[in-house]
Image 1: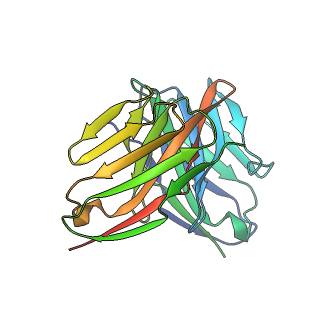
Image 2 (image 1 turned 120 degrees about the vertical axis):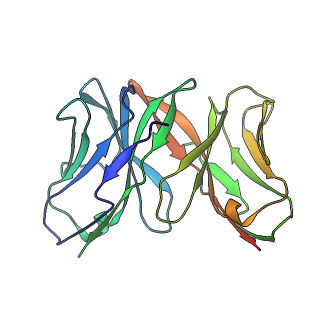
Length: 113
Length: 113
């Protein structure tokens, strides 16, 4: 069964460093998303992406964040200058299926020191 | 802003017991998804309910969508330790060309052997 994959599973970085989180969505899906979950809190929407452009972004998704689909398979989230409060699980999702459901990857745990 | 409230927040039961968890909103859902999340992993889609009054079954799990489409419930029969996890309801909220998911507060279920 097709699934969303994410790399790395865990990323440790120093405050102020750039990180790139990678996702491979399900191959025939057209809509892609990033969510994050701070430890003990709700899963929250960051950004949606369709037709090679951002469709919607949340207040969290400020100028430090960017997304890209550099080729036909990868979907990336870049944080330019990480802050301590960026430490969280980051989930990629892609949308498709009968009810246009979102399917999530296993997540990347980002730890900013 | 529509909030999705889930209850109870925590539930600890013995193997073999039945349980019901709830998802409520002040507004009408367009559709509702139920996910299950294990620690350190991404949410896994269980079911989508669309029609008011709809009932869907997934093995020992029964999902109901309220007639007014403002509430939903998940009933587990004869719970097993493998059912342990965080149960999340989520609504797809339209914005731009894509639908972001708004997640509920979650019910953390622990099934003791």
